[in-house]
Length: 210
Image (cartoon, rainbow, N blue to C red):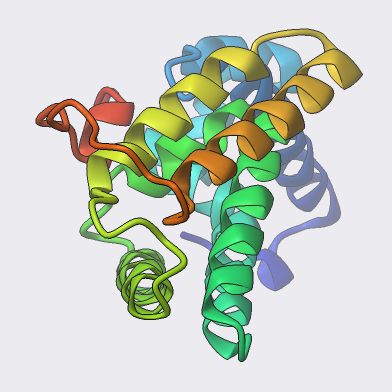
């Protein structure tokens, strides 16, 4: 991809418009929005879009690079918290808030982009970090011992449904849902649960179209 600093002013302007349009489209419609629709929203031709971003993956990784870094920072903050349970709760709350704010981010986070090495490295670091957050919270005895990765998937799927509501209603609904579920995740007075479904984080999304 041509470095931004080497582009003519009009080319830089087109690139910025494409990124802004893609960010808005992914946030409201998810990752499956057609590239032609993004070009129309940006006010450029499809050929111009593909000159700047030769594939959907390259556009997605550019749009969500900052969000992915923010998600990894949330996990880092949770790991740095001397109270593992508080770190676990804070990570769940912040990631769910990000999910409500941007519908496309969850899919982008979970979609594999092998050619985007830095993106993949950051995503995998965030996933490994969260697994360690869970392990530490369980070790304190405050997170129920039967918490499974499927439980996080269920939470995010439920939160995704809440996130489809309008504006502040979605945000308020998400906060209440997360508060309910964090209480259910506590080890105190935990009762036996039905078996966890065979879900992983990969079940949250369909692969991005190529």
